[in-house]
Amino acid sequence: MFETLQSQPADKILALMKAFREDPREEKIDLGVGVYKDAEGRTPVMRAIKTAEKQLWECEETKSYVGLVGDPGFADAMIGLILSDAVAREAVAAAATPGGTGAVRQCLEMAKMANPDVRVYVSDPTWPNHLSIMKFMGIETHAYRYFDAETRGVNFGGMIEDLKATKPGDVVLLHGCCHNPTGANLNTSQWKEVVSVLQETGATPMIDIAYQGFGDGLEADAEGTRLVASSMPETLIAASCSKNFGVYRERAGLAMAVSQDSGAKMLNQDTLAFLNRQNYSFPPDHGARLVTMVLTDPALRADWEAELEEVRTGMLELRGQLAGELQRASGSDRFGFLAQHRGMFSRLGADAALVDQLREQHAIYMVGDSRMNIAGLNARTVPILAEAIVKVGI
Ligand code: LMR
Image 1 (tube, helix red, strand yellow):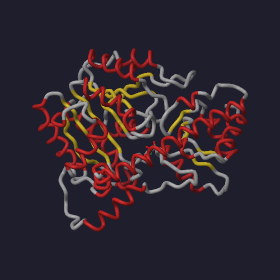
Image 2: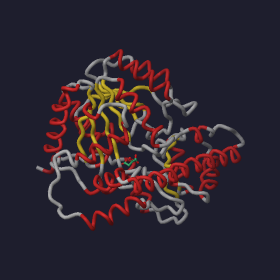
Image 3: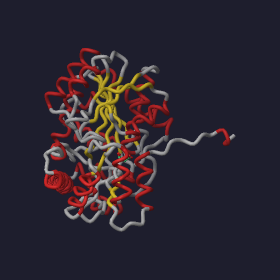
């Protein structure tokens, strides 16, 4: 029967990771996959996570199952981090998931259970795996305009116009912060306008928040999500701990369903538990437990927040340096947007042929749509990248 299988298109980001690994050139620079790297190119275990891990090793007495939706303490800690007191805890149903991708999948599953004909509106562009998952699930997707190829900012007029076409039963997928792949984000008044359009059309927002703390800070990065969740009757939220806690391979994430109707919580909670059971039974616990320990122990939390802030400001500095180098190398201000973008990514706005040239001629790896991971740079490689960008004629 296996002969009936058809080969699937390779995930572009993961294929790039492989190509980079196999490239023998010593001077190669990896600006591909969204993994944080320090100035030495390492992805360290964060200090507070390491300490929590030691403590856990000392005190953990069993590896028995936890619960279908994971440890409620994890959900409480993450809901506090993301939503603070924007909505009552009673309004939020939540289930731990394997990473942020697991949370995206479970939120979409829940939307599809609620409306088998659900249409999901996604930003153009969005994280490619959003589209791939929805295609696999047979969910119809529609793009709303988002990235302005000229300014490299948000085409907000286009976005609003497209969102006005949504209707009740539709889902609108939004990036909570640090838009992947563009780095172009909504400001507060734009978030408010998105909320009022969705309130008018009756569509349900779903927020993917995978980079809280990487943009303007932990609180500022959650502002849009809090505004949406407190203003809309229902909101789905998929959160990842991979990046901001650096626990990528542990697979820690949380799917949330917020409902202002207090009577809905139990059904929402049961639905998320059912979905976990159908898809993988119990979610992974190790990473979630470490995150819970870090968030609930004041000393560990302070250390984590301090390290996360170093990561964030380090990326901001790299943005400033790169914009400056490009200004020098190109003699123009046309790359100023790099300093305005926030998060791990920026979309340069170059076509695939130029991205290929950067890889082939300069051993610089970025995703084909010209998304680059700013954290892949350091003080030494910033000028090398700037020279190469100008040389290939971007
Ligand atoms: C990325 O966008 O590079 C990350 O979210 C990693 C992934 O799984 O694609």
